[in-house]
Amino acid sequence: MSGEEALPSDVDVVVLGTGLPESIIAAACARSGLSVLHLDRNDYYGGVWSSFHLQSIAEWVDRMKREMDADPEGDYTDITLEDAEELIPIGRNQSIGNVHLQWHIVEPDTTESEQNGDMESDHPIKRDMERNWRRFSIDLLPKVLLSRGAMVQVICDSEVSKYCEFKCVNRLLCLSAKANYAEGPLQELQVVPCSRSEIFQSEAISMIEKRRIMKFLTSCMQWHEKPDEIDGWSDFADKPFDDFIESRGISGNLKSFVADTIGILCPNATAKEGLKAVYRFMESVGRFGDSPFLWTLYGSGELPQCFCRLCAVYGGVYCLKQPIDALILKENRVVAVLTKGQRIRCKHVVMDSSYLPRRYSNDKERRNVLQRAILLSNRSLLNDAQKEHISLLNLMRLDMDASARLLEVGFEACAAPRGYFVSHLTAHGKGNACKTLKPIVSRLFKDGLTTADSEDTRPPLLWSLYFDINEPIYSPENIPSNLRIVSGVDANLDYDETIAKTRALFEELWSDRDFLPRSLSKEDDQEEQQLEEQEQAENGEQNTEVHEEHPEIRIENMS
Image 1 (tube, rainbow, N blue to C red):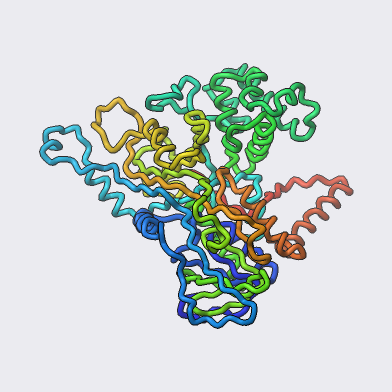
Image 2 (cartoon, rainbow, N blue to C red):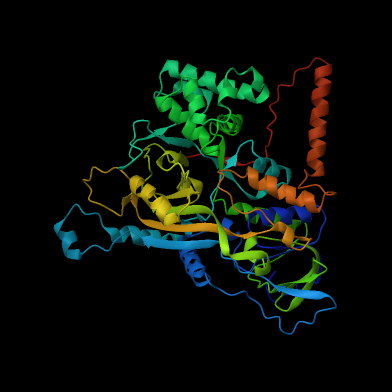
């Protein structure tokens, strides 16, 4: 719907913001039969969950800097209120801060370039990147899906999977145990085997180590079912996971494989938390490939749009670039939302924290959630002449407080033109993004292009963007009874916590309705299949047909 068309005057739910949690809520409401009006003051979907191409992310940076100190929007001087009604201006809480964008391709001096024949030319690379700006898909908040995680279940049940495609994160990396974590370039990365077949085919670990790690992983899976039968684990329950791993005779590279790769789901874990993470990791291995993780093609910013499409299919009304002026309250309930002078009656309002009125938030205090760095290069962190990869690297050991991780995507992930790579660094340290992440970036990348005969094998850093993601602090008990703020961003690698909190919010407000249930046709098909299998079992027949658990998920192979 365009901003010029009349919006509905009365709906069940008004949702403000099109980030992932808001979009899931909107889809769940519409799917359950509620009337939904979904508004966003931005001219793009996703909020802090968006994806941009190279040109539009530069425009986004300029916008963030302009809006840093923007006043609440809205002109509501001519609005007539009814008895006992109160008008509360909508807030404009900036969730992005400390934004710093830089090109690292320096214009070379012509004379110097002519004299140094081995100098790579900066001009063609920058021109090529700018010419292919549409082929970049740059996420503000990249995440991956666990193959047996909550997001996969939800997108299959809701049929959102029709609108998106995925690829396996097919290369997990870790720092070599020999690496100097304290200082210097990091040029020793190792590929981590995940599945049983990968472990036994790996040349990086000995046969004794292979048996040892398989025994360890098997015991972790058994622990999930029968924790009391695993000797000695309770002595380490609240101690560091590293200590528990070493107590099982796992050290050196083997320890890096387990602690850094599997531990990426739960940084700085205790033994109990680490065992849970191992179970979640290994449970997902083999479902769609040897890796437990899936990447959304074209970026994580696709998922909010997919849920918005589902909401629209079930009657949800959408309007982007729509200024939201105020909430109208009566007896501590929101009775209407004011947008462009139009009063829209509603029973509930769900919003992201950037819309929270200043009355309910603390202007002087904000919660720093994440530090982000987005890095563009024309070479992978670990080159493979045979094929391109989607790679994941745990960098926790470089800064235990920040617990940084890196996700590298390129052409095969539909995130960059062929020959270019987007590296996403995500951390949750105490400082700002530049302070926390630049020391890590300088160890993984060399700044700009260098001479061709350089012994430095790190990829060149061509472009970088640093920023913080934060949230206002508020007390839920102070807000109106029918207003809810969705869960904010979190530092988790996957979506399980986002799904859990969004489901809890929906069930709190609409306990009599189902949260994104399976369609009736799917339930019928599943029941028929179960009946067939039961009949075959009773008749002593063997069903040799392989049934995919989720044939709806479209997984593309890496070329």
